[in-house]
Length: 583
Image 1 (tube, helix red, strand yellow):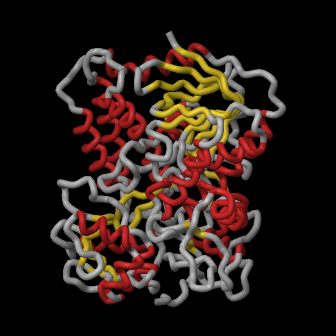
Image 2 (cartoon, rainbow, N blue to C red):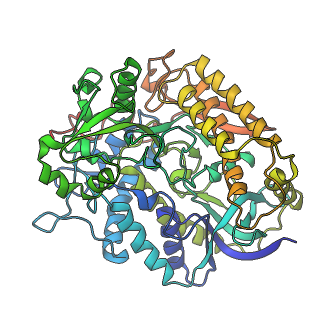
Image 3 (cartoon, rainbow, N blue to C red):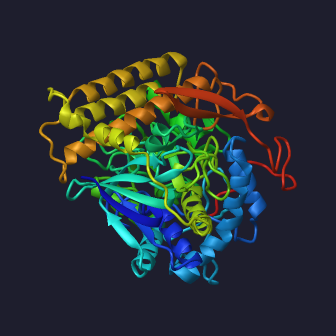
C-alpha cells in the first residue's frame, strides 16, 4: 500500500538552492503548503555546507556586474546561456546583501568594514567574498535556522525515486519517494516541484562531493525523457587532497584560494610546471590546471602517491595558518603540513556543469517542474569559475521560490498521476530484491565504475577510450541488474540505497560518455586528445541528451549569443588575464 500526501510546493533537496527556494516561496505567499524533502538531514548533508572558497559577487571598487559576466562567459568558453549568466551576476549582489542583512550570514571584512574579496583563478578582479575557508557552513547554518523557524514541512531521510507525470503526460503530477526510515513508498502530489538535489560526479576515482550524491535528480529527469545539456562537462578541481587509499579524505578539495593567494604547484621533482601549460601559471582556470597536473602524472613526474605537490610556505607559515585555518587543520588530520611543508594533490571530480535545461525563471519544458542549483544546466557552459557555484545555488534558489509561488497561484487542483508509471518505478526500485543473489558486492561494482570513468571518460578523452568506457559501463550495469541483494528489507537498508545510487550513477555515466563522444572538439572541462582544437567561438554549440526509448540520443544546438558575441566585450580593453596576486 502506497502512502499519499498533497502539498502546494515540493522541494527536493535542502542545500543552498532548496532552502532559499523555501524561504522565498514562503515570503511570496505564507498561505502555501511548502514541503522540503531531503535524502539525509536538513542542513547536515549535501554540498553547499562543504563550500570552502567563497561566493562571487561584484561589489568591490574595481569590479562590476559586466566584468563578472565577461569572466563567466570567457571562463565557460562561450558556451553558457548568456541570459542565465547575466541574471546570476546581477542578482548575486542583492543575494549577498540578503544573506547578510536578512538571513544572518557574516562574511569576512576589511579594516574599514567593507567585504573582503579574495582572488580566485580565471577572474580579472578579486570578487570572492567568504567566511574564512568555511563559507558553506556559514551559509547553510543560517539558512537552516531560518527554515526551521517557519511552518515548512520537513521530509528528512526521504529518497526521491521518480518524477511522476500526470495521466495525460503533459505536466508533472508529483514525486514518488521512499521513507528511508520505515521503507514505505510515498507519493506526494504537488502543484510545483523543484529539482534541487545537487549534481555530484561521484562516479570518478577521485571526487569532492559528499558521498551520498549520486546524480539522483538528473537520473530521474533522464528517465522522464527531459533534455539535459552540456553533459560532457565534468569539472575537475585541480587540487584534491591525495592522502592515500586508506582514507576517505582523498579527493577532498583544497580550495582555489590557495592558488589565488599565490600557492605553487610542484611536480615530483619539486619544480613549478604550470607555466609550461598556461601563461597564468597556477592561476589559470580549473580545466587548464587539471590538465597540466594530469600531464605531469602521465609523464611520471609525480609524488609518492601519484599526484603533485601544493606548496604555501613561501607565503609565510603564520599567514597561511591564519588565512586558511580550516584547510591547515584538515591536512594536519591526514599527516600533512599545509602551512610549512608540501601536500600531495590530484585532480578531483568536483562539479557538474551539465544539467536540465531551464529558462531564467527556472522553469523546465515540463509544466510544474522547476530546477535550480547543480541540477540546472547552461549557467556555466564548459567551465565553472570558482565562487560561481554557491552563487548559482542561492541566486536561482530564490528565483525558483518566487517563480513557483506565482505559478501555483493560478492552479486550483492537483494533477492525477499516471498510476502505471508509478508501479513501473516501484518495480524498478525493488528489482534488487527480486533478482537472484550473486557473488557480486555493490561496493565492488562502484569501485569498478570509478576506475572506468577516471580512465576512459576523465580529464583527457579520446573516441577509442570513450567507446571502451561505454562498453565497460554497460557491462557493469548489466552485472548490477542481474545480481540481487537478498530478501526484501526496505527499512534503513544501506545496501539497497547503495544499489539505487549506483544504478543512477551508471545511467548518468553513460550519458556523460555519449555527450563526450558527440563533441569532437576540446572546450573547457571537455578535452579530446584526438580533437584538440576548440573550434570557432562563433560556431559554438551545446549538446542536448535525451532518453529516447532507452537510447541516449545526443543532438547539437547553436549557442544564442543574446548579450555579447565572440570578439565583443561589455568592458573596454577587457583581458582574460587575471590581476597580479595581492599579498
